[in-house]
Length: 561
Image (cartoon, rainbow, N blue to C red):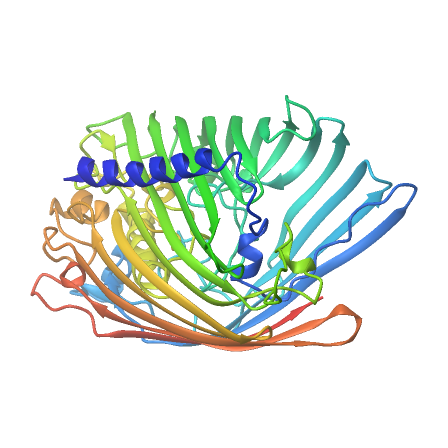
């Protein structure tokens, strides 16, 4: 069954690739920056570099979020059970709170050839309820750290070459739809982007066929600063070699992004009771294709298709157990989308859409009606201790809805990982404290699931958005909590229910946003988003009781400058 679904996903990718290649010689005009027409947050881009000009440009944003939600039960940690004997479940404990982030992006342009780019975040929980027992999550929201959590993101130099460009320094890592490698700086329809993949990198991007060629070839050598598997500040050293090759013409693209990774972690530094070193070796092959087609007879309507599929192979002892020292990695997943977009601008008779529709002759273009259908698949792992790791996890910044993946499943995995690293379990013969915590948390990414996610955006004016979406999801394998397998010997779900129940539920999302341009190129954003989750059987406990219908409401205030 799993292989059949994966074949269908790869088939969608192949169809998109065939369409891209078939259009290689087509002359129809199509939007070069499709994402900018679909999702507009009022962000300003730095002006193009100019000859004999030295320029310092500083852009950024400040976002404030007021979030209310229904709390839900999670498995109790050993420490909580010791404090309250008989305790089986413990709530996340977070119902209302305020978070913020300030992101500043300075760019120093030294003539046309050299630019120095930086980016810095100040982010975290400002006031309100704190989450409990989920410290293994990347952003656990368990302390008031909004004005002390300074996150250095980028600081790199880019030098333009006659046949491409070279970059050196701490820089983003992003590819395709952002399913596997996502820089945390791409706006999403629902929810927010955060953190992302960042590396100390030497990058060479070339066009072997000349500067006007559509074929691109890139090479990079990385020391990972932070991503889904490693954080340099946590003592985890991940070295990567990257080779990317792709054909790109306007909005259309077809290519492959391959990474070779070796990672080591000295657990003696992170956990005094451990005296071992973790290692991970893996290869990730990530295919991406995108095609855009102007609808015949309507210069303002476009169809587009996009797909990304990845396969991960390797080995690690991060998930070791008493019986299994090395775990093989065999995971795969991806997403595909089909959409239609109607542009507001460019209705005049005989007008042809330019390559960059934001520079239309009568003002900026924007999509006034966008409908999109996305399907996704991530392989699951029904037996976390069988010697093969099969769970595939999307990067959290590839957002699917507001609630199911980014709140409920995110904190179920975070509580499981936190419980597995509980110091009171140090003497357990079946658990190596600290080891599972690196691979268990999903951090909000899709994992071990397949979903259908139709969305629609209506933009009656360039400054006003209304949006809606539905998420229908099922697990791709039996849902098993590794923590409860190790401590109780029970193959049960994260809530102690039957692992055979795979229905994750149905989520409904909606929202609106108003953007108000101010003086000096500043734009204010005001809006709200909300979601409700009707949970499925996969969220039941041992007695067959599912969690209550979940809801979330987010007030959004932002400033782009």
